[in-house]
Amino acid sequence: TDATDGAGSRWLQPLSAPSSAAYFKEHPTGLTAREVLAVWAAASRAVAATRRPPADFFRWVALATPTEVAEMPADLRVVHDDAELREAALDFASDPAAHKALLAKAWPRLMSLGRFDGPASSPCDDPAATLMLPPTDAPAPRASSH
Image (cartoon, rainbow, N blue to C red; front, side):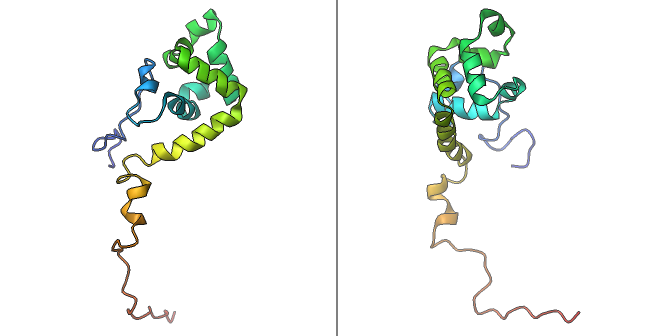
């Protein structure tokens, strides 16, 4: 779709900030809550606005003081307030490589949503698919004499 609001595609709808733990735990993409958290933290404007490296961000959001929590945007409070998400944030804080590995695993799955039936079923991967190529017996283009 070329619509700026994503009209015409269920996957290109504008993303809203998470307002509850259900955003992470019941995400329509089929990703796990940890995978959604890993991707969200890598792409969220709210996370970027904290100007913290990922490990520091996860540690801060999980261990925030009551004053810090009160000043957090709502989507960051969701991560802090939910025990499962807070535990995942602490895991990512203590092992940045685990965050990167999970992000690397989840990102391609997220990006292939709505791409036909995913990369395994894409017509582009089917050797029997008819491609719009010129016939092999077509004459070669002549070089220009300019």
